[in-house]
Length: 356
Image (cartoon, rainbow, N blue to C red; front, side):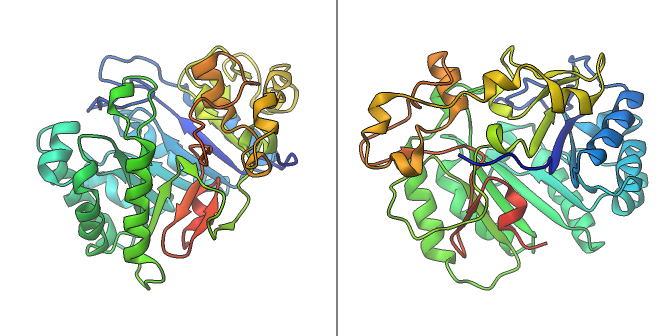
């Protein structure tokens, strides 16, 4: 299931405040949320992260730009040598901030959840126009821009048109993920495994082998075990320990699937990040693996190993039971797995299947 590796990347959620408040947000972020991680704690955390080997930090939220000091945080991470990704909805990026964002971030990730009418329905009126204008401003200045789309029943039908729309605008990468029923997202919002498989197949058939600037990358629901896929380090983050999530409350998790549980490794407001990451007793819980006897009799066991421990815990209450999403001849995979539909490579880290 993967040997332990060094820490590679940190998802740093600096606030839970947001100027939109999407219906599918797994963190239930919104304008009335008051949690902001203190900047002094952030600085210590980033220093500790570099000592542990982390190369990349994703400055996120909530919406990070609602903090008056978010530019200082970008500079802090940049000066420490991180590859810095700013994850923002680009709803209201002040023109005077642009030069600092260009200087101190290596990549900007933003969200477009459909063509204009659908996006504004899911997010906020006039948000499509504002976000696209800011995307254009950044791309024209030479900044690398990645667009992420939360695929759900409300936007499923116009996803192929959206992919074409973004490719024509020279986006560096378009990442599509299926809404997970956490936070404000509801089970009824989630597309079925069959619908998701059909969408990926449609995109794969259209773009396989195409030489285009935009990497089209999809999250996976299931695999059948007979796909021709090039795996690039696709082991579970619980066992490789190469990814950290830090919430605005200071709680630290090895995977976002556990962010709404009481399985925090520790809190950076009360203990140094490196001590939490190296010595937390909660790692003992995360070291448990799916051991369902039914799984071990399955022909896909070698590939599947029981599915996603996060889904198992959320849906069954046990990290050792098989993933309930399991279906005959289909094995459920980690929602962090990303497939590049052009070259059929798969990894648990988005950047490994994108050009940079």
